[in-house]
Length: 189
Image (tube, rainbow, N blue to C red; front, side, top):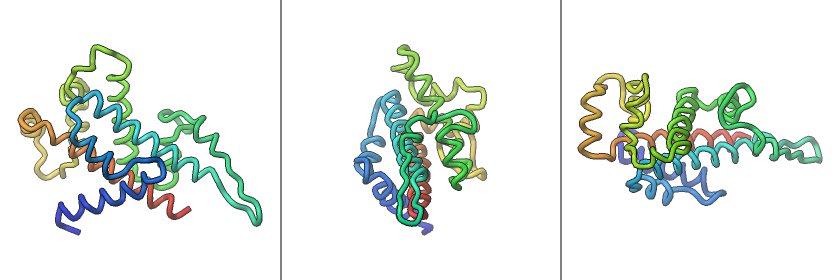
């Protein structure tokens, strides 16, 4: 699947399958891509992550033994999203979700918190919010999903200021990879 368009279509289909049981999917991904407010984009993207991850956690915390099904989904609702060994992000890492995708979800939450906990940030552009971080180069690289061999932070920032779609596309690409991995993890259970 080397054609980027084929890969994007595949990832959209995976997002659709993974999110179908809670009302997300292709339409949500496309709507997020078209979102013009950085604040609204990041809040909704993070909500999609948390909803998906909690849904997977509920499934992971349900099991069968001979004739009895045990369901303890309330535990998934009690776990913190971020944090130490008792967090949802730690749980999904332990079921085999790639560490870089878990780190991505964690970074999205941190940026979401900067928007959510300070009303003065409502009008701040996502790129400017990221550039405030000390490790903004690594963050932008992760969010843009650009390979090492051509990464240039100054060029990326200039392109994003012209276009304002690169970050959305890259972040949604990463989100669809996360949703696809979550879907596969669920299928294995």
